[in-house]
Amino acid sequence: MRKLNEFIWETHGIHAGTEQDHVKHGIDKLEDIVDKAIEAGNPSITFIIHSPRLTSFRYIAETDTNVKFIRGNKSYLNYPKRIAGLREKYDGQINIKYGVELEWMGPDIGLQWSRSKIFQAEDADYVIGSVHFAPEGLPYDGSKEEAQELLKMRGSLEAYWGGYFDEMTQMIECFGDMIQIIGHIDLPKLNVDMPEALVNFETSAHPLANRFRTLLELIADRNLSLDVNMAGKFKGVGVYPVQSILRRANELQIPVCVGTDTHHVRYYGLNYKESLEYIQEAGYESYVSYSKLIPENRTIYDDHELKVKYTVLNKGIELLNQRLDETQRRIIPDFSFGGSFSEFVDIYRSATGMGDYNAIRIRKYGKSITVTNEIPKNTQTIVNGLFSEHLDEPGVISSLFNTLASEGINVETARLKSNNDGTAVAFLSLDNKNGKVQNAIDFTKGTDGGLFKSLTYQEHAAMPNYYTEGVYLLEMDGVKLNLALRDKVILTKHINAPGVLLILLSALASKKINIIDLRLGKLNNVGYSALAVDGDSDVIRALLSKLGDQYYEANLIEFHSF
Image (cartoon, rainbow, N blue to C red; front, top):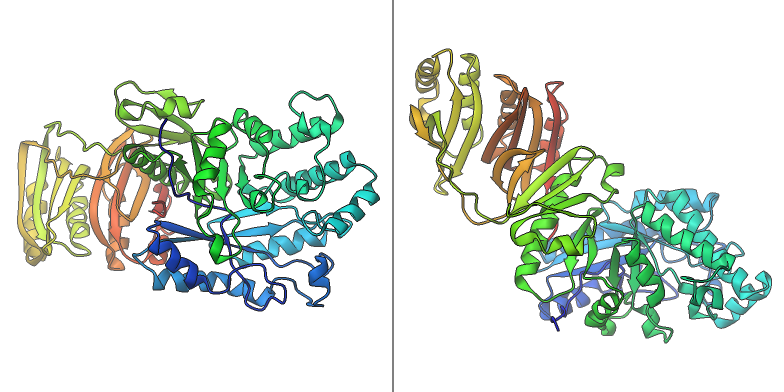
């Protein structure tokens, strides 16, 4: 029996209080629980907050308080700032994620209200869409008395549950583009029984069973994840959802998220392992968490080598998704696995193999990324190239490309390495058909001599190997790049002609953005570049948006997964 993890990367995690609540729903002193997580040695902690509700949607206890905006409108607006403060305070000690549990309150003013709350939660890592209230204004997870009143209004258990599923469906259809996760899909079992048609929905011909099967298929088609939520266990009704639902979700290849839905400090960390046992029972070997709306795949097993492989997979997913717009990011990519990653072919059922090629290829919308943690082999490729030893500071590489472009010389491939002492070395393989490379060298030495310690051209030289351990971007759209990934990477696709890459390098130099590493590739008349850089992200994005029509694609990739 393989050992399961003792820790989970939660989504429906720790509910943050809103500080002004008359009816407590979460934890106000977030530092207390962060300290507890650090003490436990956990690498990450996840907070979540409910979006404020309209006045007409209240639990009995809230009605008694006569508070107009339930769960603190002002505190909700302040929530991203609270998280930013925590991230600053605990920088380097723990990864802090946060999400929003969006309240569904119907397709009219409720929809507009909910959309506005999404925009108010800046940079949330994910959004869970949840149905807590019926259109009749009564909650599904309130008191037994409220549930019985709603049951009486609807006339039967089937109608009670059918209404809940209809509201789930309506929520997905109305703002499925703004949520990543469906919250506690069988929440009504908290206060009422599940009808026979739902208990046996897998085989039942009852209209309610068919309605629920359709709901699950909609979740799969929209590429949403399903919340596996331990709160039901705390409340004595079992995990949300029941095993039969989870098994069907697995058959439909719906990803699952796991979470404890914790509302008190004393419950933090409970049932972590149990949640993984629960999804394993339904056939899952992995689950997802989110950073900046991008899914991260997590193994259920306490296996260091497997965790490393998932890290490589998540880096590739981030790379590909950040090349795409937000609507395209929602679509689950296709995978190919080779070499030591081949075991993933059995986990991701639609994946294909790549034989002994020790890498992961991730693709969608005609774009692909290939990654590995294997150090690229030195192929000893023989080329004509320019060797440089220079100051490791912004603008130096730009100066070199500038001079080469002025002589009509195109750079075909590049290798760049920092010596970590204020200097760096570079090798640029060149198309020197016009024989003007010596002119470029002389010009550079004459105008920027103080930047360069040495600058020589060599014919029939071996491509140097500057590779060390790390996660590597092997290929972009099948074009070899072999860039060691850093915190910030720029990927471009552009016209392959002298001077085009100079536009990017000059732009970066103008804002003092340093280039740590650089790789170039080409396919016919299309050039590719991958640059590891250091500098202000907002400044870099602004520059990339102004490069011009010669650039088909220019993206800043920032890594958030761990």
